[in-house]
Image (cartoon, rainbow, N blue to C red; front, top):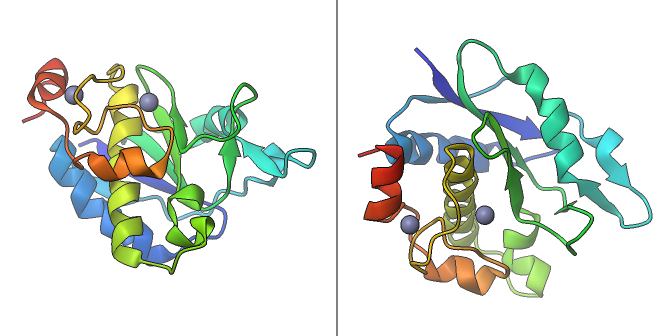
Length: 175
Ligand SMILES: [Zn+2]
Ligand SMILES: [Zn+2]
């Protein structure tokens, strides 16, 4: 049996990870588990930007892909970027097997607001579904409520559902 495996990257609130497990299993119809290691992302830190290069992290995550892996999703609190963008909420390898998602800019306190664990959990779930969708070859969706809609700010994420629209679901044959 293959698992959707969550890989904790850097320091992370274990509850955030645990809460993702049933949500991801439900959405994709595959069992989900947490890989019991902590991936150290320091090699991908770039001091001039004070951020972590997500593509370098994705590449290094390949060593956690095993026969048991359906997909491997890195989950982190660190601030991710790719060189052409100020930041990214996440990045994925189109067609698989790895994706990574960051909660750094999903936190209300990043925007000077009071912490809200419910909002954080929902946003993280949506972005986790989004990145796994990319690993399944899904591209961005025109339906703004679909988890595969693009998001360049948290306001866009808040408009989305945590699931895939019917046409995206049909494309990956997940019920
Ligand atoms: Zn995307
Ligand atoms: Zn869609």
